[in-house]
Image (tube, rainbow over all chains, first blue to last red; front, side, top):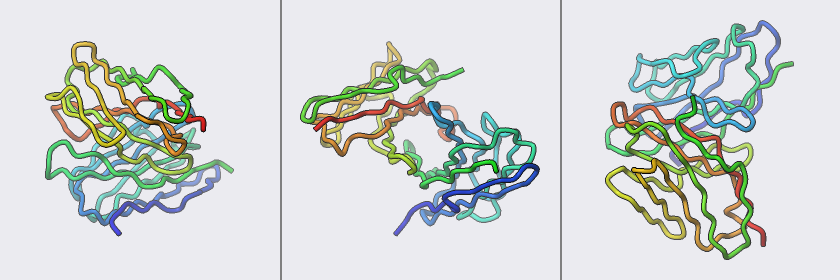
Length: 114
Length: 113
């Protein structure tokens, strides 16, 4: 069954700790994205990647880092520099090969501070 | 600056009636518009889209209308069902990238049985 898998579903971070959120897709999509959702707000773009070994900053990249070593995987690291990391994180992918294609989302990871 | 706006945080509708969700945008470069449905603790699910060359797109009970001159789009759900109760996000993408999507803040729809 094709889709996007995010893990873990819930994650807790201690002060000064880096944590990594996993995102894997088997849709053969080139483009992948990370969004953050806060209560009462829309989705805000953190990073996106259009092809392997390439990625661009979104609107709120400070305190985050990503890698894109494989087409299927786009992990997000929330670093200790991110002072307000508590949020719901969503990963998405998209087929760039055809025009006007929607993004497909995983079920998210909820990150909380201990 | 919010380029895609959903000014109604919530909407309640009786089962069987029409639900109309609205969305406004400010960037005239947007040419692809989407609606997503989201249940709590899940990711958004794609519902319906429209490109700027059209002013209407239908898919079953769902119809999206686009008014480019007003920079406004709306989602009509007819007839509304209790299972439609969810948060609905509109999103838009500019023609120059095709890769960056901008989302509204969402409207929580409650369909009352």
